[in-house]
Length: 303
Image (tube, rainbow, N blue to C red; front, side, top):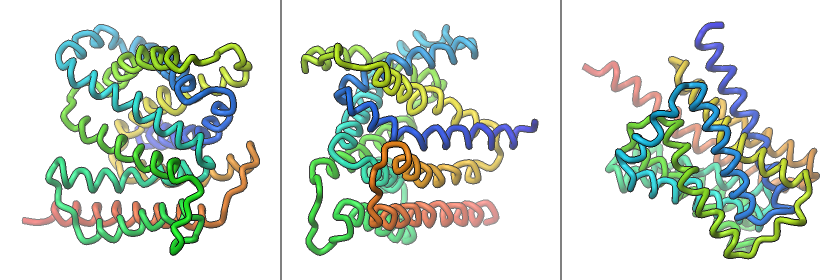
């Protein structure tokens, strides 16, 4: 199997797994609080990433990587996974999963806007159109189509979902300064966050006794296939391909598969405006990416 076929296989595997996590979030939150869910998921991610590092013979890099830039890894770990996932899980707790995951997909547009502020990257005219479409989609989803009344089912839930996009974009902006191995870096983030989740779970007096086997397995599933193994699959896909945009475009499949799974597995009613809003968001992201590729082609052929 050549590298491009391997990249496609890894990319599709990652996308299919990410498509299942919104359903896993809801199943887990039926029994665990967001803090409990993150605690179990963090531990599962640490185990899976340690196994990957062992397989890649990178265990010896963990401590030197951390000591080379401890402040970065502490701040990075506090942002993601700690704050990002706590806020995202709370948004899922307050909103229908279909709404929370659709709003969360606008993070790529948030990244563009924040990169202009913090990295001084230029915003093109096409980016403004893309941003308009993305946030129109968010508004359609949040108000269920009642745009003029601005009637939000859960203003706090919508606010948290949007805040999660800021944290995720901020994490990747911070990550532009990191030259360490990405798997080791991700592992260090979870190692920083895990003790914090334990402290927070004790602080909220979390009750662990009522959790069923299904609840434990759902939380472990989130750790493995939202945070740990799937990230490795995605990195492997990008590492093997010479056509990054082609692999990146696979991610647009994920939200629609996710809506189907939510409808079938947990019988969540998908409001028609959620689909309309999601199409607006994906259209905006597509415009942004297509114009980026054209700009890149133009730059590469310029004298």
